[in-house]
Amino acid sequence: MIPLFTIGFLEINWLDIADILLVTVLLYQLYKVLTGSVALKIFVGLLSVYLLYLVVKAAGMELLTIILGQFMGVGVLAMIILFQQEIRRFLMMIGKSSPFNKDNFFLGFPWRKAETENRINLTPFIEAAKSLAGKNTGALIVFARSSELKFYAESGDLIDAVVSKRLLLSIFNKTSPLHDGAVIIANNRIKAARCILPVTENNDVPASMGLRHRAAIGLSEVTDSVVLVVSEETGQISLVRNGEVYRNLAAADLRSKLNHFLFDIEPKSTTPAGEKSVSVA
Ligand SMILES: Nc1ncnc2c1ncn2[C@@H]1O[C@H](COP(=O)(O)OP(=O)(O)OP(=O)(O)O)[C@@H](O)[C@H]1O
Image (cartoon, rainbow, N blue to C red; front, side):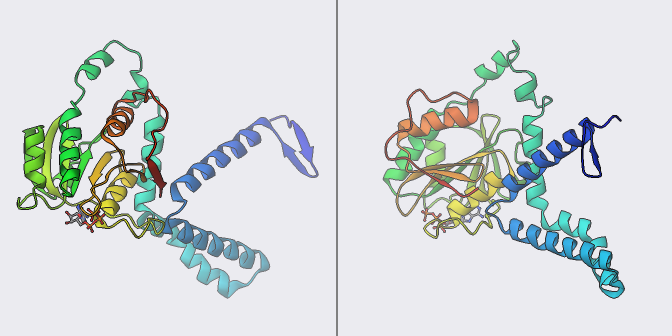
């Protein structure tokens, strides 16, 4: 290929520029996925060992090269195991922005209308959350999006019932055998209760957030679901998406945020007073 320009002995062509740009985008996306997590420290550690390996190899230090070489040999496998969750998030991020994702691909086509008509009614959730918050009863409600979260639903008791405020209140009633854990909503139905969610390992989550909030953050880090949390301690209502917590939501904010997160309906007003967002992604 004909070089565009040369820097010293280096000949640069269009392909090199595209290559550098793609690597930059890839590294930036990787940084976004890893930032704030323990995985970033592990990644930096692995990168340091790799750089050391390159240096000792170039210097011709044979013994150290063999030892570090062995380490690098299992490096890819170790990375897949260590970064399981981050790889999932990364692939999900690519999948979401891919043109083959139905949300992008069918954008603007007539059959999207059927999807619009099929939207879940948010009122039972908002009413139930208000009522639970008023009585300082804790709740954890997961809205499944691109995946039905079968794996997590199966960790609890399968219900598959029509959504109603009364049913939600009965489930989270402190004397109910189903109140512990999360309720999963998928395909407009209450799929399961008492579900166990993955707890976030992010060290930046404020200490004031206990296990309920950590479980909500954890699930939102590894899936595209939206999680509604009612705090037993403070009665505050929060929403969690992509590892970010939107705290202290009033009923109107809760509806507009749910509309925005679940159906891409932009909120009409600007950020309401009293809302605090804690980014722990
Ligand atoms: N991994 C998990 N998956 C689902 N639910 C969980 C998980 N861990 C804890 N919970 C729920 O959270 C409850 C404990 O909440 P905890 O008081 O530790 O959290 P919190 O975030 O401080 O919430 P609150 O403000 O309501 O006290 C448990 O009783 C259980 O119902």
